Image (cartoon, rainbow, N blue to C red; front, top):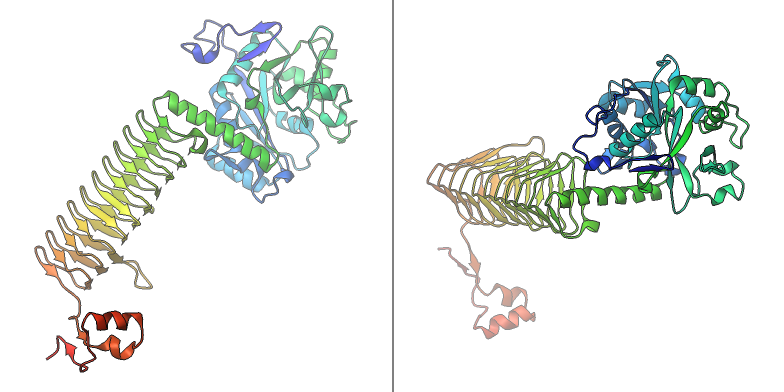
Length: 509
């Protein structure tokens, strides 16, 4: 919610039945243009990745800004790019193709960036200007800001905030009547001005014609030798037009990112915001400070998430499921009532009632059908596990299709790779694979078949058969007493009645 001495929102937008001006009975004022400034160098990030493309909650910083702006439905969106414009531009083209990219080849300040963005833009109407590195801004705040700007018939409005540490930010300087007088940048502020805690958030609304005229009067007589957009405020005010600063009641929304420390700070705030929304929607998050959920994740009510868990990508979790502790889901669809304990799952489907973990690794392309089980220290990759089937212990399942009601014994390996190609294994319904079986693909085990424990199965096993592929056991009598004389093993064997005897091999003729 926003505040100003001459403007008060009667009720926060999120408590109203609708958020558009038309529904609330006011004439709709079209937002004609939105300009997002994303041309900065971002040198303090010390990264090959452009600053605005660093992710927060599964989305690049820039995307959060653009998605917050979208509900205002600007007639045109222009994004100013400069540093790393190839990477940033490619991202914009792929994800926001309707946006117009404006190249600021030589960074000469925010005023210069806006001058470029206004070339060939509409000459009348309203323009919203904001920075591309403020991912915590919400559409609710931007909508309220726009409504206030229109209601007050301002030529220029600045979104301000009172922050506990204003260092590095431009300060809002007010006159004796507490009206906005000008904005002074940190580098150009005097000691008294640096004690001001109300800062410029870098979010503005202007009458386009008024802004054009003010931009023409910009000068670079400052410590940076650049054209500051903030200087247009004083120019517009001196012309006698209305200029207002409208304060946000939540300064965290206005935090920008310049280095990794600020990235972490904003990420933590975003985490708390996302978790709070899920909890209010009926999700139990046992420890929100150690639970990380991406912005696009869908979670139904009555899901329980235990500490140390992360849910990212295009994941969804259905009602009644239990996630964690210490579980990572990335691009996973989890059905109702499923349980995933201390495991990592990526780009897979876990159907209703399925159980995973602990310490399982479910790799991309896996589908676990209803009531199936993947147990401790099991890895599954690009495979289908049928309804009610189990892989309980210490096994690897790769490139396989397993029918329903089948049990895979402990320490079974699906040998899918011959050093050149991957091969498929098909296991039927109600099959019993003995412990420590090697299934050498390509291979089919028919419905109701068995394999003997310790077998290396290289040929198909027909339905209802048992595959046995192991050598007959031989016991060489007295071997320990002869070959390990003096050892603890030999002493124990002697006490048990063993003798050196002959070199006879038990089991041979």
